Amino acid sequence: MSEVGVEERLDRIESREEIEGVMAEYLYLADRDPDADRIAALFTEAAIWEPRGNFALEQDPTHGRPAIRELFAGLGGTMSFGAHFITNAVVEVDGDAAHGRWHTLELLTKENPTVQIFQVAWYENDFERVDNRWRISHIRFEDTLSFPFVEGWAETRFVSLVSGERFPHPGPTAAT
Image 1 (cartoon, rainbow, N blue to C red):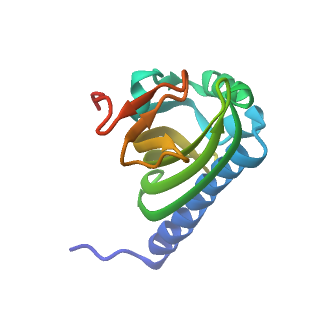
Image 2: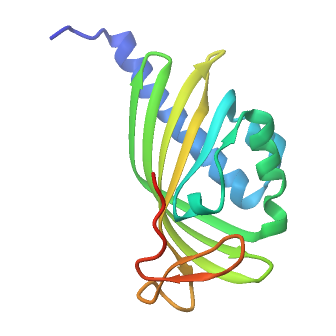
């Protein structure tokens, strides 16, 4: 077993803190200040935003910072409220690359038709250090439950963020 120096250990600790800060800023901006330019600046040029789970049935992966910017520029027309709560962070750093996993609980209001949604999901993200700043290189967002708040999850496993259509428990199955 090789001995890791103090500087490398400190870099890992500081990197984990910075990466958790990037995730917190990403979710803050998505919820409170959906400025597409500021959100896009958190990503690498070649980043990927990939839906998984039920959400993947309705949305394809988004490739590249400009396309991710456009994805978030349209967010206000489909969602009028969002509140993400992330927990269970696991962040592994290897030099200028890192991987992080978070469990998320999200409350949101989807528009056209209006539905209040309660969502449980996982983030599995990759990060790269570019110009001494950590940026998101790949978001994998996998919903486990997405249901109308007033109905609960026992009957409705998934409500479409596009059409508002409801799917019974256990819901549609998407390849991951």
